Image 1 (cartoon, helix red, strand yellow):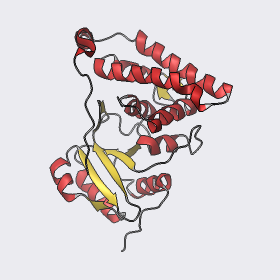
Image 2 (cartoon, helix red, strand yellow; image 1 turned 30 degrees about the horizontal axis):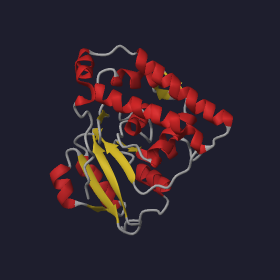
Image 3 (cartoon, helix red, strand yellow; image 1 turned 180 degrees about the horizontal axis):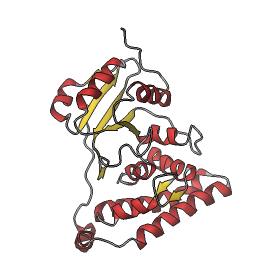
Length: 247
């Protein structure tokens, strides 16, 4: 049976992949996940260049077979060397790629996902999705728009049932000073940049209010001993990683 070529529309393609690989624990993250979570109703639209997924540890071979059947070309050398943590696939027809992280998301900081992977149906949980954006030290325009879109589309909550689990965000940041530092910097960066988007007053009020509430919850969260020890060192020692260029 001939594989169907990947769709040009990335959000529709993400849905196609999830439907076809429904028996594999596979969830979307990144900007496409933000669009999926908002059901296409985005306050600040932006273009998408690729799709990112995460899967469970030990499911790499199934993921490889699924993507090959979906019309993707696997990066055999990279996948052989790094398949325990990350997989790469290419959509040659549309000149783009798919990254599949394994068990956790690692860029400037590591976001653990192994125990939370299946809490949501198609994307990673909203709290984790927000964290994957807040952990970017060199925050770019697309990341900022994703954060605004996510916070506008979803209220803060105390669990993962229906909203951004602010309690989980605060708890995770309370154990990791480096992640806390980058995330709180980005909350303030996004908050300070809201005016340039020229949102309707009520829209800006929703985003600003939720960012303020999130920051308050983060500040009120008790900090671990490890957090306090690292906080004494502060910014004298680099607290984030430079994202690796792959592919």
